[in-house]
Length: 561
Image (cartoon, rainbow, N blue to C red; front, side):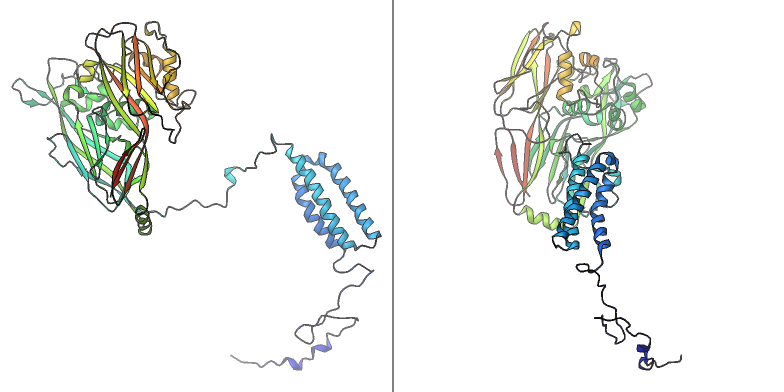
């Protein structure tokens, strides 16, 4: 590499950069950098000239003209008029000795403002209302990045076996305190069934090809007679020996046909065409005493909300089972069958949070409790003796529910009979049914039902309306004709608005009573009334101490952690 020393002082650049004009000039850091000053024209004309001023004015006018293209025919006249008026004002100021540049800027801005106001007024004519906000299609949102979940570090599903032997009843499950959070909406029970035939010697044997026996509807959930849930030794749910009816009503009334025919098949749900016979789709998997596996979601109130259970909490779950007479459905009464539960376990989803978030939640729990808003359910059964034409009773005495669902089942079906369907809700010739609570009657005027002549339109309409399905594209699959035959369920919406709003309702105290009148006497074996009520509830869980407070409507259970 050759290094050459450069000396700029010997170039004599001043020879080539001589100033030829006159007047002041710009002098930079090098001695040879000189300018020629600025242009001196007529008085008051200095700087960049009129062209720059007009360019600035064009910047104001251009957005207005672009936006006004669809309305050019209406705006052109206003544009020309305002242009002439602006020019006249500029000339007036110049004639009085004003600076032309200042006049153009001031009057140009004023003229542009007036034009924009007029253009905006014309554009508003295309809207239904000037107060209508502007909005763009979601497909034009090119510059927004989806949010990132920075709360969860890991998640997994865990299995819990029964604490007691599978041959011992009821089943007990315990979720011991862990550092993970529990997704309460993902608590499932997995069960394996077998049906055996009792031979003449009294010993169980495998089913034969001629044995016609099956299970009731959705056995993976309805095999539970009662469900209890305790959190830190504090009871937060008890289904009152009617869990089978609760989960059956939840499924039939809340889910569309597509969900029942698809996913709920894993719980053993198959639509019945004839409720007096065993469903072949539930009978064939159990033929020859094969093992039949089901999975269903536990439907306790605390499990029907989206919040996670906080860490280091102990959860106890108790499952009391239905009898074989309730669960089995056979055609021949002389045959004897027994239902065996080979396996039963819980499947629970747990979630691990980021360390920083877990610490923040722990510090927050030291200050205030965690709040779980729930839709609390009440299940109650009442026996109606045979031969009666009317029936009156108190359903709920401590609070007025948001909604009440009532159905009537023959008493033999309710107790359990292997040749009868426990979920056969017949109309039983009800002529009128009403609820009274807080001085109000639901419905406001009588139904005057006549099922023999197919006069039950209002009862069916109210049931679908109060379930939020009337006049919508959603459906639970219960048709008008099915309501009369096997799904005669009366639904009463008792909120102030008679709508199922997502939030809490105002507290209403009082007794809720039912009054039923029959057009024919109740059958001699009697009828069982199944009542399903819903109300607002709140569960509080903290880390310090716990106490129980009972209000008129809400049970606020405060559980220590």
